Image 1 (spheres, rainbow, N blue to C red):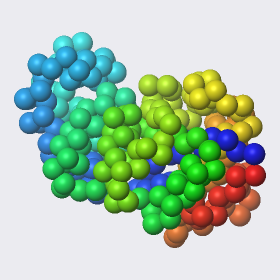
Image 2 (tube, rainbow, N blue to C red; image 1 turned 135 degrees about the vertical axis):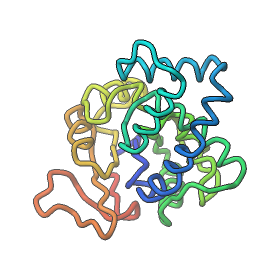
Image 3 (cartoon, one colour; image 1 turned 60 degrees about the horizontal axis):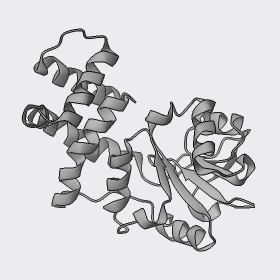
Image 4 (cartoon, one colour; image 1 turned 90 degrees about the vertical axis):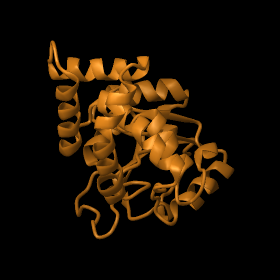
Length: 227
């Protein structure tokens, strides 16, 4: 019996297009002014330093760091420093009402139903934990954050690394066979299964389930089985 669910966001609870067509362009436009006006803040300084370090830049100007981060946005680079800074920028957009995070129509009801069945819910996404909380706090379905017991990002490890899922299992304290991971990425599901988790692939239309897939596959949250 499933006692905990760990879910991805992009392509799983929410459309990829919202992230790529709304969030990424917003962060790209606002990034130069954000860095210029917030570079003296310790948290921002930390992530700018980490970005330069990850890129192997020993000495870089502010303009070079901005150019680097914008290039990473264009490449959809899963870099922890970029994700942290994007989350800070997105905060303004959510709170000002410029956008609300997309969730598929059945997701909120499914999450509430699982929660009522005493299933603990968690998020694991490449987006930073603060960005995840903003996403579900300002969603089209309202504030969904009370439904979640915890959040994980790439600071716990890469999403295609089985070790990341083992660390998540340790953090949530549930037996591996009682934890279900949901994602639209087969390689992530492979890693979760290698750590002992149950897995389900989300194939949102027009994507179809693989003919010879190795993971249980569904088209929406209503079709997910917990036993």
